[in-house]
Amino acid sequence: MKVYPKIPRYDHPSVPESFFESEDLTLVEKFDGSSFRFTLYDERFSDRYPEQVESAAAGDGSLVFGTRKAIRGSHRDDLEDIDGALHRAVRCLREGVDTAALRSLHAEYDSPLVVYAENLVYSTLDYGYTEHDLPALIGFDILPYAEIETMTPPGNPYDETFEGFLPTEAAWDCFERIRVETAPTDLSFVPATILETHSGGFDPAAYTFPSSSLEPAVTVEGVVARSDEHARRVKLVREAFEELNREQFGRQPEDAESGAEYVVACYCTPARIRKQIRAMVLEDGREFGLHLNDDLYPRVVEDMWAENWPELMGLDVSFTPADVYPLVAERCITELRKMKTNAELNETDPTTVWEHLL
Image 1 (cartoon, rainbow, N blue to C red):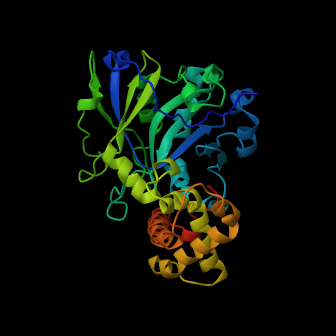
Image 2: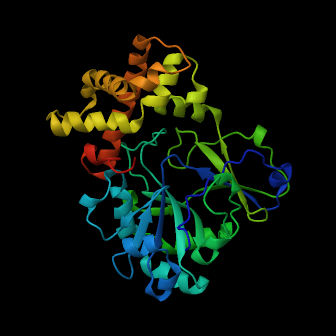
């Protein structure tokens, strides 16, 4: 059975120099949001879809959508049944994507298409979400179902060759055709910004990352270098973003510089923090807000001790428990801010944001 393809990952541990000498090298802005994909369920091609897509579709013409790891539903579903972090993206599917145009593309390619996009939710970079309207979804790749079997089966994501994805020019043409130009900006679907094209030479080490097309005061997360000739995309991320990302999400265990950082990296997960926030709001009747952090972070630490005590006592690293508290407090206030901003962005209750996206 065909597998509904994963969101592509562009970084690769060993990129040959010849890639950056490509005659068709295109640099596309890499946006900081959340992975998203959608496909139109078209009864003319009912035998092409995997069972998961058929099950999620609410009849012909349904836009079935998913995140990096799973199919999440149809744009015809009730928003109350959809994770709050996806509400604006689903509204975009309803108002910002032309299903008739997408259906016509199916006929042209003799295959349904999977559209990959960035769901613009607040993650690490703040593009001014609370200050001005931003698009909801930004398209960056398209894959015909007819080509899905050419991809390496799920496993090591670096094994994907990206053969079968539409060439850059064809993909961007599709993006322009399926976008509804009259849709409100905050519910719009737009193509990713093409920053530069190179023919014959590009030095990634000397590249200066530009401002984001969304907000001139913000430097881009990075860029995606695309080459149809090499059937490859390579993600170049600026070091300052990686450090900011570590500040926002905490360090990875392998990057920890102390025992306390290692413990927080391993056990103070976003899911654990959100669980405690929901308990405080839904079970204890507390009002959601940043003020919750005074009581939130001690609860998170207590939950870590209670649930993971045997593992913590068996760690090969030494740490002082008191040093864990300020690090957890920083993680918790960051999570509260993101939930607050994304709840406003998606016009939903903060406790529903990332409720199902664990």
